[in-house]
Image 1 (cartoon, helix red, strand yellow):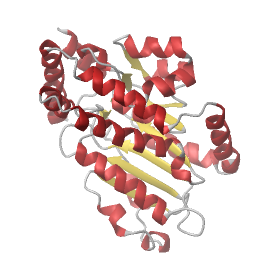
Image 2 (spheres, helix red, strand yellow; image 1 turned 180 degrees about the vertical axis):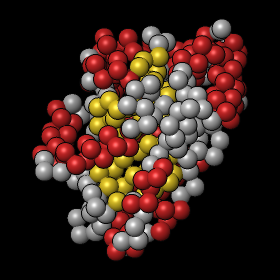
Image 3 (cartoon, helix red, strand yellow; image 1 turned 60 degrees about the vertical axis):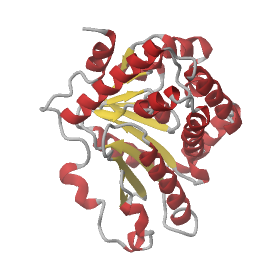
Image 4 (tube, helix red, strand yellow; image 1 turned 120 degrees about the horizontal axis):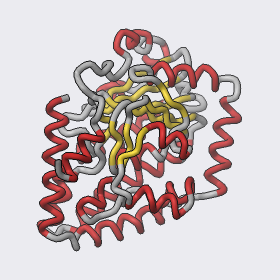
Length: 318
């Protein structure tokens, strides 16, 4: 078994056909209740192509599930949906509009939260020496991440729900949420070192503040897949759930947070004030990443291509 297939086998370990279905299943119906609040939300939010949104009036929560058309990665099409998603949330929710106290992001891809960046696109842009397009892709990613880090300037808590593999940019995206709930069996990793690159969409900035620079560096260059339990011990994951119980764990967290919601929201704001991460810092890291990408050798790009094809196989099997 080579390093590429081994990495993905570990990331996807335990995600066979007997794995509980991702999402709400039989519980979906209580979220789409035709309420008066839902009728006041722009229907565009519920018509996004690769993001499925469901609003629960009972607890003022917007549940969003990534529903990728192909490989579960941040393709340009999915990033455009995320830009529209954030815009529509700001336009429709908040004080004086539809209440929103919790924003949850999960995935409909069985066994995968997100594989991260669009490696197929990266390879094409690197081979054509198109640094500007690489940088623009990265800027869009960190702009979305930075807005999420600040909860879109709304008085809400953000929750990332992981029910499978969160790799590369998928892991980085999770780091922008206030809380992470992960099912046992979920996995986390930053595979960029496999093909001579580094994670360029926020990992250094966020992990160094959360864990310190030494531990952050260990996670980034270790070429390891980490379990949900290991991430919990590090403080990255805030709550563990049994396989198939992630949605219920989020709902339980919401119930327990209701009475202290204002305190939790402002505590998160205070934490961000103590260790601020500016958008300009994130974009400077993207610039370093784009420059480094153009230095990859042909053998590095072949490794990237093999990883892409392995991800395709997993996505197809799911």
